Length: 236
Image (cartoon, rainbow, N blue to C red; front, top):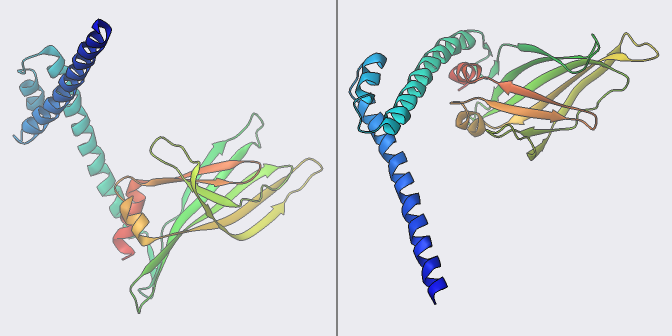
């Protein structure tokens, strides 16, 4: 009986501690929002935070204010960049939208030829009767290897950069080999992935990452927030 009572008291104590931690977290968020609502400069916000009751609360709220300042600066940068991307969208007949091409290269091994080159862009086609726009991500992967990879599928990556769910089929537009030797060839595979308008709108505030997979290798492509914002501003 004593053991049961002891366990019961310990449980109440742990629940109480958890509640205190949640209350503290909630209070710090409320204090941060209260200070931000005052419309002060960032330096003045930090002064207000320094007036809080405990050193822990000062530390937490100060960090949240710094994060809020950084997010605001990044949002302003993204807005300017999105305008530039919007201006580069090619519109054909008010129904076809072709975003500008993004290019990147990634080292994949120790040899000089161990480099993957990615060229990709978004495209959209509007049905003039329904107004529905169907989008796709078009990607060209160039690489040097002994064998062609034959990309066959794609997976959307989550916020923790895990890309093992939501597998989708891709369309292979072309595949070629050149400069072949006894050891390797320069390969280029051009593929596309269909994307819904709802999906792009839902991720427009953060961008998205897609992993394209073959049996030999996978390649991650990140579509930046600013690029997506600019493209969607025109493709509507």
